Length: 211
Image 1 (tube, helix red, strand yellow):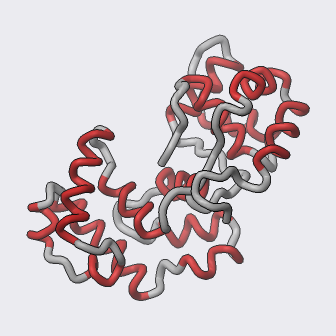
Image 2 (cartoon, one colour; image 1 turned 30 degrees about the vertical axis):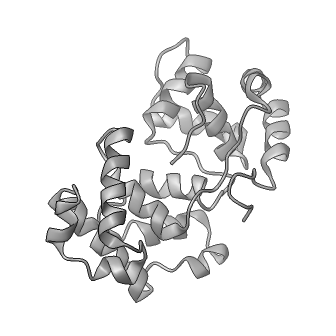
């Protein structure tokens, strides 16, 4: 995996292949090429824990809660978090449900039920199946993890409203498309659907997408 902040090894190849395969996407890529890229941030446990903390609250609120949680945990690592009391977590600003989700995530890491060491040998669907065992992690969160932590090149998150909106803007006269329509269109972007998604997100929001 590239160092944090570096693009994936496949990033530039993906942009060139997508531009050659899809003239509309080529226009988007030309606009944003060289103005950012996908990069990995954080270790797997911290990345997943942050995704749970941030569910259904604003970015600002999520950061505030995360900082309080970090202070309470002292060390954000699975064994430590698995032993934290629910009351300690809720006093840091987490809801009772999110506190349970964090402990469940930590328990899966401690037991080895979720094990990053063997992910390099698993395909995307196998990693997703492992992650969604954890309470509070659904398919969308698992797909964001595949994209933004593992840097998998061919993820198309069909539950993502931003993606469906962007596809509608560029391919459907501004009308948001269905998941089925997006999936059909996405076939032309294989095996670089992660990069296609990133560029489409960027076309709606000039700030880099991060999860």
